Image (cartoon, rainbow, N blue to C red; front, side, top):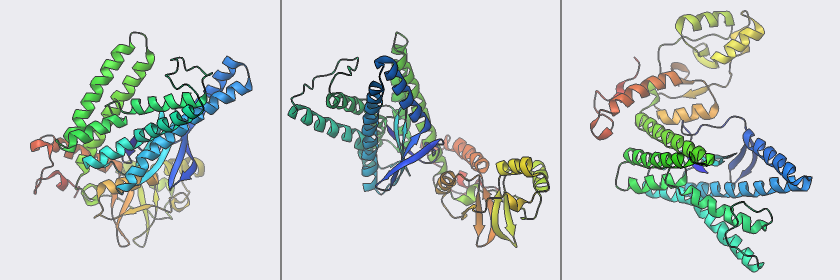
Length: 391
């Protein structure tokens, strides 16, 4: 029940499948979510002893997660008002995640996007309360045991109330953490606001974890979830700061070798060992025709032998980029496409390779310099970290 941007803060989730598409947003279900439904069905079967009881338990869980999906669409629709696309919404056993193409850094935009999800739950609470009152049902707080004999409308009402309150806890990755950062950003720069909000969240996580040691393992789990969420948000913000203002040219490596489609996999393996190069552009007459990555090379050698040709296993739809392209955008494209490298081209000619290793080296160097720059801001001028590109 959170939002995240697409580069490192939240990668496309493996072992998940698209089950629907609403307003251009893919709704995905993770494999672990399906396991959760099976576990709920089995538990209800054991408790109730009937297929009807098991189906009722799974059905109510589905209604809860329908509320979660609506919550995530609250984020998505507000984000769209600010020109931010939602890539997908994924359902997990712990809730849902709306993956945005970027997290808004303007405080007002981030505040409204963060509030969009809980606002949906509040609207659902009001609507369900109205239905319950019209039907003459009591809407007082349910027993903490979650009595299954209560009308579904009443149970769902309080589930949505709990979702709204839980998500407003002022800690990442919950919406309350983003609300806190947005408010802090009205006075502090975004990077500093992220650190303060993360510190508040981790302090809260420590307190929850301490309380959980005295009889509530669930609180320990929540505390760990909050602690790791805060750490991930700080890491993502530091990465964003390190990449700010950089282009692909700043991070690409220009020392590489290319292969031809008629080269053998054995020759490619020898070059990989001697050069330490894990992916190779494949060219014909200086024009890019494919990429041979590390994994296809290993699989090709195992299945076809050293005499098989590079052209038989190469990726014929390589990711291409321009040296002038913004580095963070290029990394997002690489991640979205699931490609091991971006081949940087100038017209037809290959001029460089953008790899996770080359970006990681640049980020490490730039991050070290950022820590010593006045106020944590990026250095400028001829000694700026942005000049730390390979020759």
